[in-house]
Length: 97
Image (cartoon, rainbow, N blue to C red):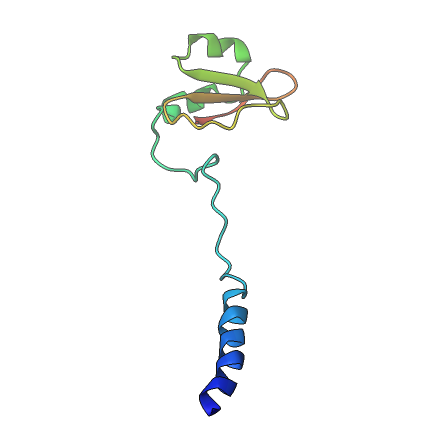
């Protein structure tokens, strides 16, 4: 008879344990990878930072030119050059993505 009186509380403990919070882990955002290898040869174009955006016409494809704050897709293309402009169309950053 003792076994049946412990069965209920033991079952309750098992069920409650299954409802406990999972351990917290660092969130991973695959659309914004950490800096890694220079897969689009962006290092070769760092000398263009600070210049007028007209020079980006000579950059190889694939490329994406946008002003900070402009909406852009979140797809990541490691071979694509991202040319970021300020409000005066001056290149402020060139990176891969």
